[in-house]
Length: 208
Image (tube, rainbow, N blue to C red; front, side):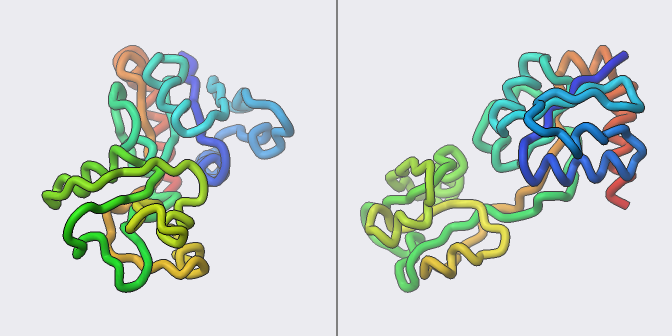
C-alpha cells in the first residue's frame, strides 16, 4: 500500500532527505528537484511532496499525506488532530525569551508586552508562570520589537544566538527544546500501520 509523505520545505527537507538516502530510499528527484513540488520515490511505493510547515499539518490532518515531517514549534502552535510518533533529533533549537540587557520581562512589574510569531506558545509559557502579558503578533524580524520599543521582550526560536547578539539582545529564559517530528494521519495509522511503522523505523535507524 503506497504512502504519501509531506516534507517541510528548506532545512528540514534537506535533513530528512539525507536520512532517507542513508536508509536506501530513492530520493534522487528530491535532491535535484528544480521547481517541482511532487516527487515519486524511485525505489519504493512512496510519493513525497513539499509544503510550508503549517500546511504539512493541514495535509496530514485531512489525510492527503499519511506522514508529515515538521518542526515541533509548528506543532505547538498549530492543530492537534494527528499522532506525533517520532522525534527525529534534527533541526534542534530552542524557544527562548529574550530582550534588551537589564530589561527582563519576568522581573518587570505592571503591564508587559511580548512580541512573537508564536502567540499560543507564548501565552502558555507565561500562563504557567502566573503572568498574562499583552502578546503582539510579529511575522517578520521579531528582534526589532524590543530595539524599537514595541515590546519588552520576545519569544522566538534560537539556533545559534547570532541574530540576537547582532541586535543587542540577550536570552533571559529557555522555554523548551524543539526539533523535527514525524506526525501521522490517524486513519492512515490504522489502515497502513505496517507501512507507516516501517517508514518510521527506517528514520530511527538512520539516526544511529
